[in-house]
Length: 244
Image (cartoon, rainbow, N blue to C red):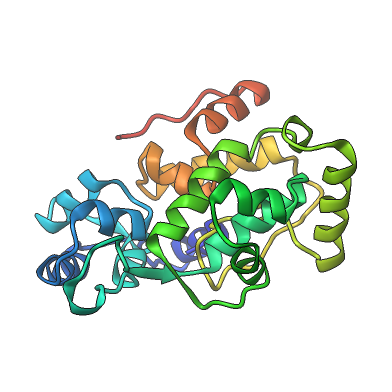
């Protein structure tokens, strides 16, 4: 559920949280099929302790977390070598596109990921509906490493400009355009009247009301928690109180 959808849901009287029963049942199913908690956590973009708490029915969870856990599929035959579980490819595709928007050429991204250029090309062009967890994790780690760095730190100015032109020609958007970058149904918001800093501050307040932790907020916004703190400092707004 995107931040805007969550706001609308609250106004309509729809709760943002649910019992952990369905998610816990699915976690136990995945465990029986050989998946470890860290594999489930990576596939669902939550922490391993979160998986443990949900499995033990410790408190309500957000609908978004429930949905991500239910989308995790067990590896065929229970073989976890290399973790062959999959998850929707939308977030991976959007993170890769955001890096190209930032100025990172696809060829450089492929080299850094240790992946064939053709595979990165197919991911960029949304040729896959689902992606292996280990691929999503590698892309996510690279995105967290590069998202706030100028591409010119790694490539020439000419190469960065060419990458940005490529991204613009396809209409690719930065990660900041997504309320929830991993939601396949989400649509990008490119509204120019609200600055990125202001958007982070406003969305953080909304997500705190949903009961998300620092980790959950960072995942939902597609950025690191340090970036959330920095946005609040720039806006002169204190971080909201939360339980983490």
